[in-house]
Image 1 (cartoon, rainbow, N blue to C red):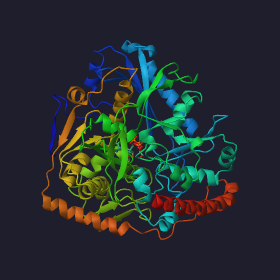
Image 2 (image 1 turned 45 degrees about the vertical axis):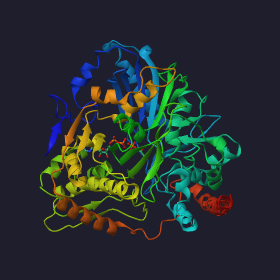
Image 3 (image 1 turned 60 degrees about the vertical axis):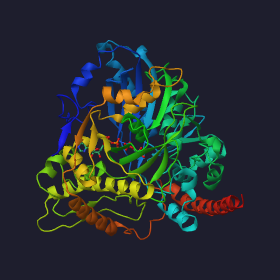
Image 4 (image 1 turned 90 degrees about the horizontal axis):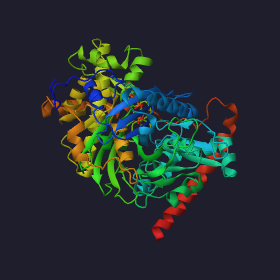
Length: 582
Ligand SMILES: Nc1ncnc2c1ncn2[C@@H]1O[C@H](COP(=O)(O)OP(=O)(O)O)[C@@H](O)[C@H]1O
Ligand SMILES: O=P(O)(O)OC[C@H](O)CO
């Protein structure tokens, strides 16, 4: 393995996935400075955490993390309980704060709090009672597939949504989820009629709760993932609101990522009285945490999914089909908006969890490295984990997972290795797209996320992409980026945003260099592409949208959905002709 370390004397990563710093020495050093603290709520799809950082050196000194359950009542449906989410956030903050006294701090040293969250996941709630009206519909949920297919079939301009929002139409984004909730959940419809219904991404739900309903806000990064925000104006797009029949009053107001938003007032929160000054989608936060602040700088976060973002500076770059154009960050109301191109992979670490939990081929996903290392290659086995279709650069919801190339000699080790390689190949798909469609030549890749503890995965990635890979020793670049974002807000002033300086002071990297020849790389990548081809188009017709266990929703679902489609297309035709006339 061709791994070198840029950190003196501590190049062996800590294998515990629960310790955010790979090296415990960093944790000790963090006590050297005694300045104001900044807290970060990190609400990921699987893990919720609260971490506390010193400033201006940004060392994590305390943290507590818990896992958040997923409710999956039918194939392709993923929901989470918004109340469990809030209870977990409050628990994490309480537990992390309890760790402060023995470190010589107290909760009053926390000057401000930032939030970073799983994006696109959508929650609707009652503004009067503050109660959720349904479970959160998670980003990877594909219940709106048939609606998407019908819209795609009707819209003549394939880039209609992309030009306005930077995004293709997909089940991934919030607009379709809000629309589904309005069409299928009677309580939501009634609350809408009575103008009591509020909607938002997870950041908005958290802030509403922490401020007892005083603030219904979001930031540009989260808003840019809804399919409702106009990338140019950075406001809710009136045409798209009409298209999806969503009223603006339901939605939060859009802000920059870093400003004083208000104070936490919830009596349930140990953070009561502390200012809120940062909001960032979690992939944007890790871009910032990886210090990818110059155009061309690129990071890939390896968790359940995999999200590769390339900073494109203050101009949005549009890809003709494969990649998303998204807001990377806007560090203050007057600061420039910085954009990114993103390639999203729906299934990365999730493939290992599947091998562990469903197929029981692995005792634990953390054993993947050991199993895969026991064989020198994947034995010509290719695994395309298209469990809910394929995201970037294919955007094919009709793909399904395949494992191909099996022979009588195939062992489980080959399949585990093929699962690791699938993460690398999917990443290469995105790098290729960045090069071919947008002319970006990425010459190195920054990596973070829980899965990066897997040294073999890192080496396979360098070998598959033919690029040096820099693995951050800060396993949690996400919370780190969110901490910097909140701390530098005007009026907080815990630090100036000086990425160059912090890059060298605090963030250490292990590097993995490619060991393959170009010919080897191309041969294997060519086979991967053939495997992907075979996974496409497997689902011939999507099942009709059907609500799950609640029998009483069933009848209601088809009627409003058809009304929605008719009205959507009428509005689309209307708005398209209006656009053409103007
Ligand atoms: N040490 C490890 N080695 C390999 N895979 C891991 C390891 N730790 C976690 N994973 C994988 O990472 C994913 C979870 O990462 P996490 O950051 O908790 O998720 P999320 O991004 O969904 O919040 C799981 O799919 C799991 O299979
Ligand atoms: O919580 P993660 O790491 O799975 O991130 C989810 C992404 O934000 C979805 O777009």
